[in-house]
Length: 292
Image 1: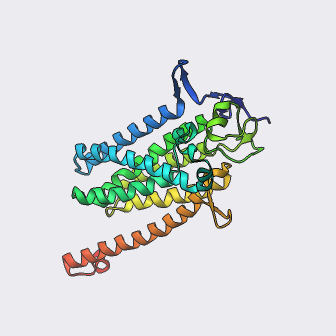
Image 2: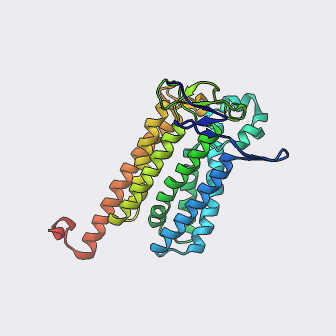
Image 3: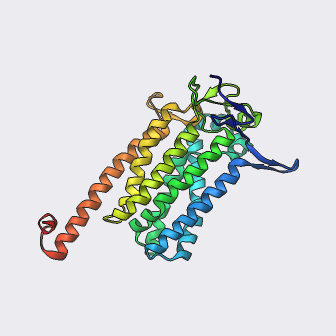
C-alpha cells in the first residue's frame, strides 16, 4: 500500500498538510507557529483554571507562565545547539539562520530550564512549589500534544523510513529546507505518536487529580509517563541531528529520560517519606497504625 503524499505530510486517509498556513507573498504564516501559539494559550488557560481550584492567584500564575514560556524557549534552543555543537562551531552563522530561528528546539532543554526557573520563582514569591508544579503538569502535556501537531505540519522531528500503512510522505521543499526532512520517502509519523501519547498523559493526570494524596504527586507522574513515552518513541525518530550519547547508543532525549525517571523515583520516595513523617509528628501515632 503506497504511503499518502501531500505538500508537507499526510494522514492515512490522504488529507493534505501544509507547513505554510497562509502565504501573502510578503509574509508567510507557518502552521507550526499557529499551533505553537494555540498550544501556549491552551496551556495557560488550563493552568489558570486548575490554579483557581487549588486556591492560587490567577494574576501570579499568568505572570509566572509568561516568564516560563520565555525561559523554556531559550532553554530548548540552547540544548538544540549543544546537541549539535560541532556543526554550530564550524558554521557559527547558523546560530542566527532562518532554520535555527524557526526551530522549536529540544523539549527537554526547555523543560529543564523551566524547572530550575520555577524553583527560583516559587521561592522568591513564596508560592507552594509542589502544588504549583502539580497545576502545571497536565498543561505541559496538553500543550506539547498540540505543539507536536505543529511539528507534523512542518515536517520536523520526523521518523525513520517505514513500509507500514502508517507511513507519511513529505514533499514540500520548505520542510526539507527548514528541518532537513527527507522528501518522497514514507516515514513514521513520530510527531503524531508523541502527540497522542501526550493527550493520553493529559487525560491520566486530570483523572489522577481526583485521587491526589500529596503535592508533587501529579508532577512526578507526568515526568514518569512522559519519560517512558519519549524513550520509546525516540527509537522511531529519524532526525540524526537531535544528538546522541554513548557512541550513538542513546539519543540525548533518551538519556535525559532515564535521568528523569531516576529523579522522579528519588523525589517520589522523598515526598512519601516526608508525608509519613509529618503524619507521625502531627498525631504521635505511626501513619500505618493510624490507617488501621
